[in-house]
Image (cartoon, rainbow, N blue to C red; front, side, top):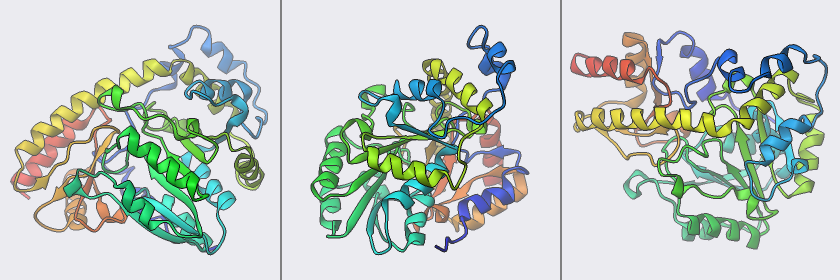
Length: 369
């Protein structure tokens, strides 16, 4: 296996901890440990009395119980906890795929959703969402892409970096196509519960049947990336077993304090979702106003879910623009090339409270670049 450098993470490594404003961030406003513990009387005592031993490789029973409550049909035994979403992606690909397999990936995409499969020796075909279509996807196109060796279909809903969703009927068509053709459906759902209109929320893929694996994480909607807790949920006990066997060679188990804090957080999931939702709604209105003032600079398709959007830069090169912006103002944006996009798009994030200050700096930069 030979994995290419993770260009998105290398870009963050270069700028993230030096930039003043991460206007590209995909996570929602974070909480302090004190804020998290204040959600539950006595939670601080639970943390202080915690023994710092190993945890169960599958994840602590209490945490898996709380994760299972997110889904309609999943039991705690059908949850496998990981150190963030990235480990889960990596282990799923290695558990499910073999050299020579064909994989279809919702594109543009978070790079590891395609690159890990390539590193295994798979052929990856992008199922491309296009700005002119409102970032929607055509299930008939997906059906035409299926090959005899298609082992997995990878989707990301709500979508990073475009903030799009799909109709429920299309979502169910995707699962039908995977099942009919003997493929697994890997559904990256890390932005779920950030829909602008909750009635548009899709079911979790794992609740549709055993050919699906759903990915979740605390980082995005819940604003807790520092806990480094992610998971997969599936009725497919075989894929869970194979992933668990591989996990023995990576993290083995997660951090005991992180698992306890994650359990506490998920007991108050609705509170965290409301908190993030208020920030997202207010900031999305600010972005609408900003892009209305920049019709000659950006083309803007309004996200319907998630914490990111993907406007197109109409003048200049997106990579050069992002570099000059962060060097000049300390405001970090991400060029679309980091998501295998060739359309000169830029990822904006709107889940953090400092967005007004970042937008003001961006506006001044545009007025006098």
